[in-house]
Image (cartoon, rainbow, N blue to C red):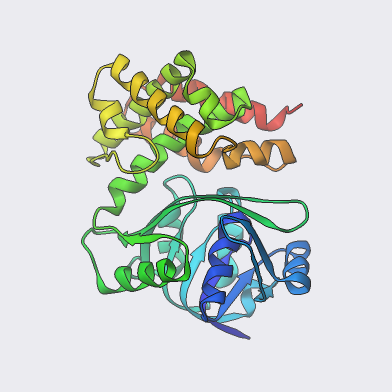
Length: 322
């Protein structure tokens, strides 16, 4: 049986980046990984390159039920693997849990397993790529936000974010995590759709006026859904989502193009993780993200025509890929 300061479910790019940095900083880390990835980690450690270059030995578990306890559990799997990944962990003693996954289902899924009082909200404005060699290319170190689902700054959110930040992965405790999670999803949904349809680098479609127009309209539809759920949006993560929703369509397109130009300068090779998954033949995150948003809109009797069209289009791309 295993115990750890941090247990990380999912050893892809972001999970590996966080785990490697925490372990290097002296914290006990356990990576819950599938057999092939666990073997890579056991044999060569977590190998990080890019913004940081080092190799760090950590323990890898292929059987999640072997985790006895963890002060903090971080979920970093793709969304379609969440239910299966969490089921064996119901018996583990977990102090606090949060998910850096995309979409809006994650907090409810964690609450179902561990209880809402142990769950924090979170989002990752951080990027990396798991290479076929097992190395992880660390490409963007912006921020990992952690906060209480009910809002406000708590000692545990400050402590967890501070520990991650001190390890070398930027992290901040957020008082308005629900707003940030919804804002991140609005940006992610738009960028994901354009990423898998154009298969281009992020800055390329973000600076194209036609693509930026589609992105703006997708963001604004998610914004309508947020309004219906009485969630205030923010300009903080990735795209200026609140401004895109509140200004004119022309202003929204111009704002997205400015972000694209900034990415061209700062991260010219950045591609969405969805595009990496598509290129590698891995399943896309569709049902728990775009599908979930469409179903929420239906429950609210809200018309989201573009999102409702892009959802089956992305699902078709996932099924029929070249």
